[in-house]
Amino acid sequence: MVETRERPLSLSYRRPADRSEHAVLEQALDGLRHDAQSDLAEVGSGLGLGAITLLFIGPVALLVAWMLQFATGIALGTDRTWLAAALLWLGGWAAMSAWRVMTRRGRMSALRRALMADIAEGEVQEESWRFVEAIGFQEAEKLPLLYLVHADNGATVAFEETRLVGRERSPNEAMFSSAPSDAVLVRGPKSGLLVSENYSGPSLPLLDIHPMKLAREDRPVHGTVLDRPWMAVTPWLTGRSTIG
Image 1: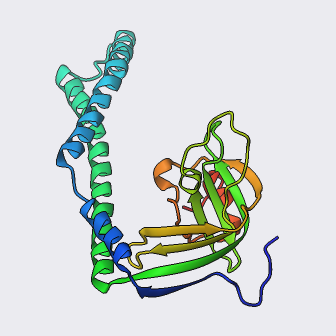
Image 2: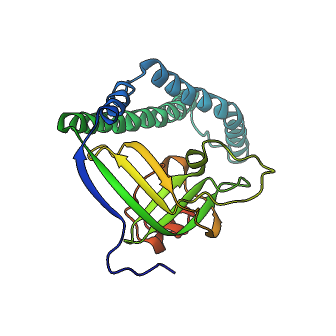
Image 3: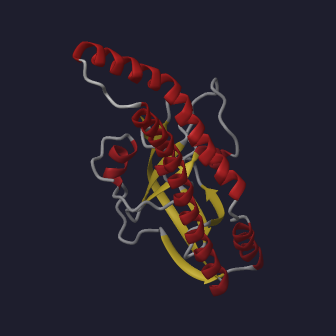
């Protein structure tokens, strides 16, 4: 059960960034560079995957078309039609890869603008958190790799286990929780970039451990404050939620 408090201990406020925090924001901005060669390689990889699948699907489609033509006497397309279909297939795979590249570039550009705004304003957002319960999520047969913790003010924050303990847990290692009970997080107000993190107090026990079904690119990153109510995060991460 969530502890009830007249005045939650979790709070946040903006303050001037110190020199080290300002440096972290600048380093993050410097690291946001488009790699055209990597983008072209990803599109080429999509085209290659399309060609590989075509090698398997193409002969099957031709065989089925030949059998139908033999049985009905109706020609199912000319050589030019089949060539056009193959080119469309390859183009579709390349287009999907290009869309992923464009989406990633769009997110990077938005983050760049937000970081520039944080640096120009010279402020950070400092958050003091008191957490009262935690749930673990794991992928396949791996040990919990993501914690969702519930704060005393009703908010939910995500933490990656490897970031909390500084390493990956070995498969034979005894199960333990590293979900924080108290944390101080400093981030860029506009970008949300986590500048620093400090934890204190005993680790919270896990209420439960669930299998995680959400796609990797859609999962919350370390230190993210979720815009979902606590009761909705488990259906979302386990793939049972109908709301995106």
